[in-house]
Image (cartoon, rainbow, N blue to C red; front, side, top):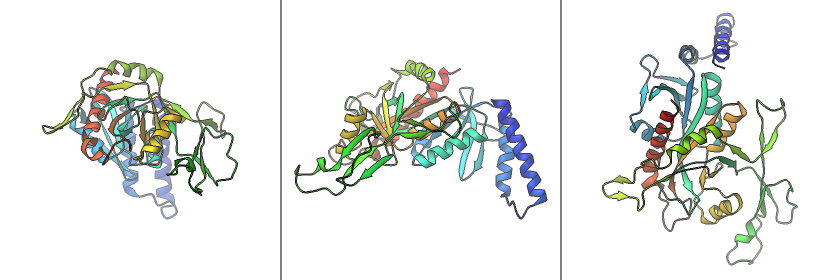
Length: 337
């Protein structure tokens, strides 16, 4: 895989240089992008790398706060398409790290970009998430075995026929208060399967997919992390009531929705038996699997996704959840050696 990628990038560079020399006006590639592609070609000669993907700045800060990431001396980073791809090592393991940004489009785009351009051997995605599982607590870190894209909907009128292929139906009128009063014109929502294209499938033919599974051999290795020490306190005056724990093998839900609603949280748990809700994981998993790469996800629980009484706890405990997640990722990478 590494040799094929290097050859592909080398040929791409030759083609780009040719067009710039022959038809510069018709093919105006920015010089900074050309420079970045040249650096990527050099970086790939030292591959393969683990691809690490977070989402937001607080997760990135927590990752760097572990002190485990050691940047490459010659090429510490490459800037491309507005993102900064950082090159370095963690416990001697070569890694390329990028912050993708919020939402499934950003997550899929960054994942596809890192897989296409760099010599990658697998993807580790990590960040914070809402807790939908009452047996878990804020600060815990989970490594789910499956993720569902729960944001692909058939939203139909009140008296319309629901699509029989939908996985689950949500009747909005059943949430009226008081119950049964009036008519709710928002109707019904049917959760659909995603369309999954894969290197292993027939070209140009999508397969229906609801649960995207992370890589089993990495999950097996991650099980050795259960019992690891995690942080309990944000500072000397703000601590969680219980010592956080790491749990492997649950389910997660992903959509372009920040869930902070008790009723919808209960709906997701009752129908999909998920333990976490986030806005990127399913996109990273599906994109990695589509390209034939192993993938694993670490999510630190930062809030109760609407299950709380009062304000959401993400502002208080988000940084702590991010730090615990980053620590778990660093420890996992250590086990890969």
